[in-house]
Length: 229
Image (cartoon, rainbow, N blue to C red; front, side):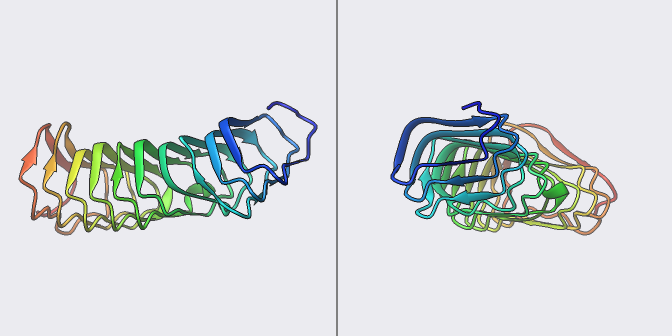
């Protein structure tokens, strides 16, 4: 939908959108009100610079693709997905928190450039994801995560500690350019199945780097910095 003059949009009885829920370039849109909506095929919102609130009382629980870019949302209350194919949340300068009960992301989970680097992200039930790219967060909770099929990228200015206590398998692991990161913990990581293990340009990560369960890395192993192992 491209309706530049619309300020609010709602559907009081709508429960399901089988196809795409697209909002783009609606620069004066401030609110959405869909109290019964729970299921959406694909949700794609982009360039909604005044969108401040979501009226999804029943909570959206399932989508195939979720893409939210360039809004004024402070949180995603009303969107609490359990599964998705793709999640892309980027350039939402007021988005301070994301907390979802996700268990599975089939393709890619991407968080980039939200809250001016101050995003707190929690996915306490996430077990499996096709890939992960995390940028500009202050905290990341992924305690249940066990498997990342492709590469897990961590590149963020403000993250101080990174822990994945149950992660056993990644396609590849890249922890790069994290100026505040001083601690990492991957006690159960056993293998990188199709790419490299890379830890570079993390100037405060000067203590021990330990992967006590690691037995296999298919790609290269690159560790650069003033580290002890």
